[in-house]
Picture (cartoon, rainbow, N blue to C red):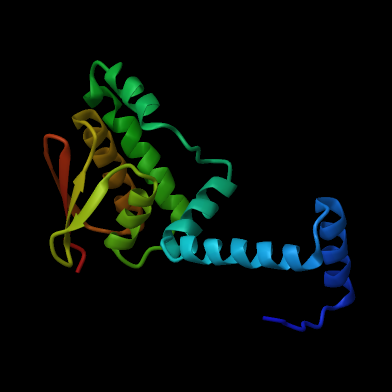
Length: 174
């Protein structure tokens, strides 16, 4: 198939530059570009856009990091008395709640953002109740305190029940 394409000056210069740099024809550059574009399109179809937007937002602020789960588990295993950390984690949650202000119109949206941080896996039991599954019990205990503090500042009236490494969070706001 033969295809004629009109290029503006800038795009034409880019194509010339790529062709010269790669030592291949302009036609080959266009074929390769279409192949790359096709692969990217198929990969993007698998990405949940809201999740990606939150990743960018959180990581771009330099207040969040990517941490391997093994590192976190090692740190949590070293915690001898998780209950001693609960007040601190609740305070961190409160500070986050103040920082986020009124950006979340529902408890589920707030919990989904925490899920995007890979802190837990969430299952909606109904419109007001959510089960959060963690890797270990210490993590569940500390995140429960964090969620309590954050929701207090965000104005969500919640109840949290911990069962081993699971939390059942109920929204009593409505």
